[in-house]
Image (cartoon, rainbow, N blue to C red; front, top):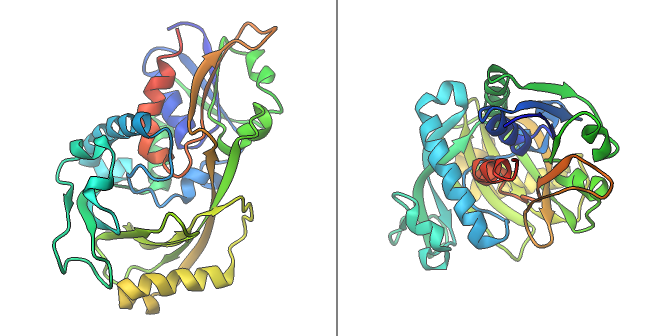
Length: 318
């Protein structure tokens, strides 16, 4: 691969795509408006699972490709932030999952009495659980080791990047709404509470597709991440006190010791959902010489499909 590449967007999708391109020989720069800690990716609970993402068949393939990568990265968890952790998805049935589920090692239906409360069905597995601040720092470090660079820069149009590169890769998430522009982009607000971990070692989720309230907890190093919400069209970035209290209460129904855990922080992220699902395509805008590659619209599963989508996007670059 020859020529300069500018990847616009410094979240997990942008950094993973930039790293993939750099390790294939491209000279890559990432232009990011936000520091790694301010991106939606940094807020993610980051359990591998194809959640709120379309199109289903392609997303399943991207997710499985990413799962294989995370399995390898988990062998160096301290550096990569990726660990394999056991847990259960309550309210999920094996026969209700897509074909991808058959290729997830150890994924099984739960036995009677294995689930808490009134949940009658669920699936259990050891899955990648990713400490995003650590993982984003690792991605950046590996990108820089491959000759890439991350630059703090806000753009008003992709033409700014096209003036400096042969290839521009759009990994801007929700900002694609204005930059493309794409009026199919929708924010799905997620609020989280970080608490001191009272001894929880396994993750748990219970998501009702018809409700904006979900229940989950993820044991991350130094904290237990409690969630959550899936509020479509809500773009408030400040935490809501009543919502936070409800999150803690729901999680404490599953593990009562959570009720007394000391709160460490509140977090809000806006998932970049898109009508029609992920856009992965390339073209040359009228009047321009640069190739524009789109890789955005990953909803609540950016971490889950990051490597699969990065490789697909890199495959569009000659």
